[in-house]
Amino acid sequence: MFNVAVIIPTGVGAAIGGFAGDALPVVRALAAICDWVVTHPNVVNGASLYYPLPNVLYTEGYALNQFASGRWGLRPTYGNAIGVIFDRGIEGDLLLRHEQAIAAARATLGLEIPQTIVTDSPLGVELRRGSSGATWGTIAHPDSLLRAAGELLAADSRIRAMAVVTRFPDEPESEMVKKYRSGQGVDALAGAEAVISHLLTRELELPCAHAPALRPLPLSPEVDPRACAEELGYTFLPCVLVGLSRAPQIVSQPRYLLPGDLRSSQINAVIAPYSCCGSPALLAWWEQGTTIVLVRGNTTVLEVLPQDVGIKAVVVENYLEAIGVLVALKAGVSPRTLLR
Image (tube, rainbow, N blue to C red; front, side):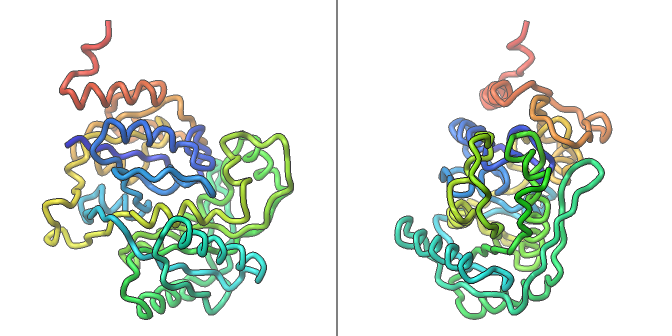
């Protein structure tokens, strides 16, 4: 078995993976040479676009950190019934658009989505931006979100994954949104999305992912191709539903791991941007002696370099070169012997 983890942190303006599923081509290529590719929703979510792959394990960021540390295992599955939580703050017409996306996923994709629920109060998402330019956010009423999740699970025991749709602030004229659409900035939503999905995953120990509810942005002929997937519809929910439908189940007690489950020690290599070496998952795998491959060309707004945290890694310029390194490792060939 040859297994790889792909990490591209959320909300840091990654040149590849910082937009609308634009790291999906990387994952597709890796899936052709790996038995399992473990990655997080940010890497493969493309709003209305998606590309389901049977050997890609769609693993929320908090779960990925727990998996990397050895606290949790991952159990591949062929299908999950999905519960969907809607924020009370979503207006009626926008809510209907999302309900229609769910109806389409049931009818056209055959997904099992037995129950939805609306929170008992607006969740109150607020966006924040750090001094580095990275984005994050807060949620005013996490208790309402968790109550809704508990009610869904109590109402239908079939639910094995959870999607949440929260109303995000509309900022079509903000400088950050303009830069992001032109391919120059940081995704203003991604950091806050991670806060929400981390909370649900930690509390439920189930596969979880988030989709923001927003008004469509004004039509523009100058949108960067990497952001265009978000211009195609009224909702970002389709990719989340597809990802969750086959997301691995979490095994939170290692003593219950079965022979077919995946353990942290079974990851042969981890790929991440060169400037993002502060990731808890990356550090956990480095401490275990896992091969780390860092891509210098995938620039971000962060500057946490391998030498800053004591990581010794294979440094490459791009993902094409990274894939070559992985092919060599899979063959048992030292990458150094391929150079003169």
